[in-house]
Image (cartoon, rainbow, N blue to C red):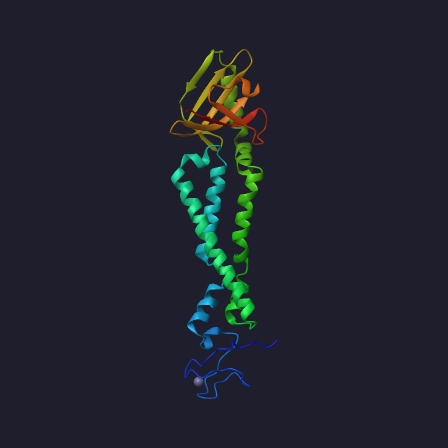
Length: 257
Ligand SMILES: [Zn+2]
């Protein structure tokens, strides 16, 4: 199928209107052009901008999308992830909105271009070559949205740390019962998490709850709870959420008023 020259294409050398010529050669000055290569003829500035805008998202957009998606997934893999660095979370959301706007503008320009020009110009061919770039951003959004259904980054990261947490919990499980709440603040790495402090709460015989705090911010504390007896045996202000961790593990939040 022969490539169609845009309606308003002009000769690069003499600015002759190249519309409807029998061959790809300027009748005024003899300069040849390739309809498939937008660099071999002139189109007006407005149109050229549209052509450029209609290209798939560039490497910067792609890289930033991947980085933002990775950091947001990493944040959700910690019960207090989003709360731990509020400035970073805020920056990530603003960046996501900027990336979305840039993407929508490009997509709209691309549709606009496809509707107004049926020519298979060189830029469109190049755009097709890098077609995967159109898909990367929606895929990032879909992956992030999937964590709203089930927090799989948290589940995977905890699963990989499960044995280490169980081993640590066993030490506190077998220690002498101490009525009330005891805290130990020897921070250390457990599995793939960095645990800030450990809170042991005894609500009665056999109902010991062990809280592993992974994130502290102001008066809030987030982490994991190992509690066989459910919410009844929790220390005050502590809430547990079933996020699909192996029982009897829960995600915990402790936000004091
Ligand atoms: Zn010419």
